[in-house]
Image 1: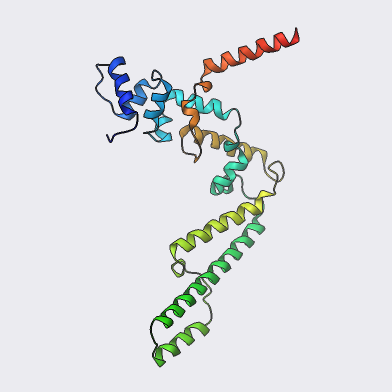
Image 2: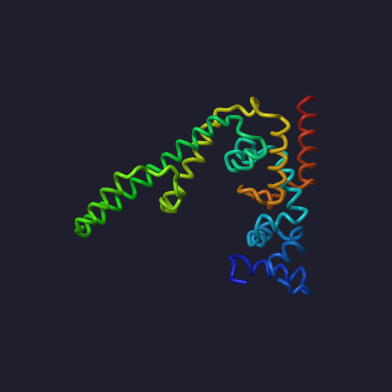
Amino acid sequence: MAPVRGWHEVEAWLAAAHPDDTDHDAAHVFSAYFAELPMPLGRIVGELLSPTLRGAHPIVRERRRRFAATQPEELSIARQRELEPTRWQRTVGTGQEEEVEEIDLDMELELRHDAEREREQEHEHEQDAAPQSPEAAQAEVASRTAPAEDTYRPSDLPAASAHAHLNGLHRKYLDAIDADSLDEGYDSALLAEFQQATIARFVRGVLPVSYACDYDERWDAHTLDQDNERMREDAWFDDE
């Protein structure tokens, strides 16, 4: 394994706590000793693994579930609708088919216009770089005056430019639905299904969000029980 900052401290802990275990692979160490490792060392080992692999550990899964139960903003329906619009459409639907179709049409026209403009700029650059024969000049004029094709071809647009425009389409789609209230126009059962799937995906470690709670002992059951007990005691003294 390539040198990892702090790994020598992990190996020192392993040598002291489990001298007979010579398997120092990160996945094995995390699976076998995460519950015992001091949290700074647990983070060093865990960050060598994907959130999905860490999610196989029962302690991590429970911490994620308890964290999700607090309804953090990053797991909210609104935020996940923005991060995963395809899943949102598949599960809940947009509720505004006409508006989205209009946006798709506008973006297709915009993509086509930009593709044509880029071709024109390439022709202008080539014309400046080298003189054209009369036949080539006639061919260029004919190509510029020819009727536009009805269908946009992705190959007409460079990959980077197409990617930027698709991002623009995604942004326009989000802007179109952003004003919608999640409490109006959507089936509550479908919203609940979307949220349940969000939490399940978070627990598995496949959402594009932070998983800092994996290393936070505050989300352990005994810690939460102690916090709740302290809150009850504080409330009792406040009532006295």
